Length: 125
Image (tube, rainbow, N blue to C red; front, side):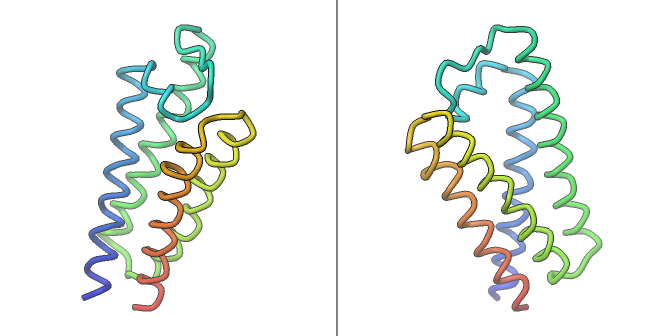
């Protein structure tokens, strides 16, 4: 039962990160939600970097779906554990940039905690 819940949550995380990547392509202004103050969303150079991030977000989400389709829950758990470093890193970036604590803890920190919990459930399966 817990494995099924963790698998569904992993799928939702994968879908969510794909949507974040697609949103960055379609609406660069959405990058402000990341939490870094004074994000220069109109700057062409920033938009180029945002496109790089968007591609990586979409690929990361696809990795989750590939593992959901063809791997064991245990392997998915190891992947999710490694991928937990992404929101942890994002939280540290926002914190170092004097971004809002709500983004540090409420968005990136909460995502890391959920991913860690999903990882543990899958690894214990």
